[in-house]
Amino acid sequence: MTALSPLLKQATPVTIDHALGSEIFDVDGNRHLDFTAGIGVVSTGHCHPKVVAAAQEQIGKLIHGQYTTVMHKPLLALVERLNGVLPEHLDSLFFANSGSEALEASLRLSRQATGRPNVIVFHGGFHGRTVATATMTTSGTRFSAGFSPLMGGVHVAPFPNAYRYGWSEEEATAFALRELDFILATLTSPQETAAFIVEPVLGEGGYVPGNTAFFQGLRERADKHGILLVMDEVQTGFGRTGKMFGHQHFDVQPDIITLAKGIASGFPISGIAASQELMSKAWPGSQGGTYGANAVACAAAVATLDVIEEEGLVANSAERGAQLLEGAKAAAALRDGRGATSSGNGTIGDVRGLGLLVGSEFTAADGTPDSARAAKAQQLAATKGLLLLTCGAHMNTVRMIPPLVVTAEQVDEALDIWGKVLAEV
Image (cartoon, rainbow, N blue to C red; front, side, top):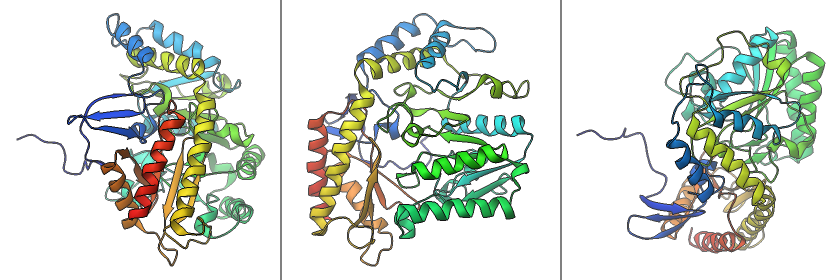
């Protein structure tokens, strides 16, 4: 009998019948708060009426028009719509299907535009599961183990993860930039380094935000050495962090950004944005793909961007994110009896986030990762109607990523459930 691969393990026991907004209803009629959002994908919530209507209308006109063969109106509309969303200097787009493909495209463009072979990524980053992007991923060996040799030309520099190092943010940032300079002096010459590739907030790496000093330090070094700065906005883009793009919190200008996840509310589409000058340096034939910029996905993306603007979802992400982060910290403080601290002691050693990206890191009394308790909390939450995921190198961070349409009442309900979960684990 044909079946799914045994390696595809569900994070929750839920089988969905239907979903709307931030709520999922299973085949038994039970309601669940979805604080996974398809791993940050359904930005406007499940089945937003305007996105559904746009997709339904487009299906009756054209499902697929391969965009290096013919042009179609939804793609032109999406390009025009993104003109008012993207940073002004990023005025050229290439579309693909997945986040991994977008990162591959940014890697290819960086190498071709600079004529340099190497890239530097940052410890804890996740960039995909293909050979190239798995090589660039250091959020966990599960993404890159077992199919070596991996791609050459990738070097790893520290990310300023203050909690992991047990330092202040300033100390962690100074260390990360100092080590980056040492890597440029010892492992990959600046003249052979095409790009820095980095997430504004580590995603699979544990929901660790970067900071302004760090990203401006990257920009300064990039400018000094002719290195490109690539911001992986796959998970942080389109309002998720409380700004349209994550890098906008840090007053830094990237040369390339990668796009996916929340752009089309669940339809598969991704891409990269760069300047026309930079994009023109890609080699002929290096950009393409059968399903890239699918017509239905493009129509859904246009509708998604309209909903984000019309319903003020970027501002809602900032407001509800602050509410969620404050509540998660309060829940950890109540559980520990003294507050989540940076010392790594207690059930939850750290609570952190940016916008609607909130992570609670479970640690044992000696400060070591407590993966078992994080897993127990995530599973227990599911039995109480709150769907969550784990992340981090040790899978000991429970993450909350609700749709951008989540309400204050739903956040309060989720936090009430989370508090009960912590009381039990």
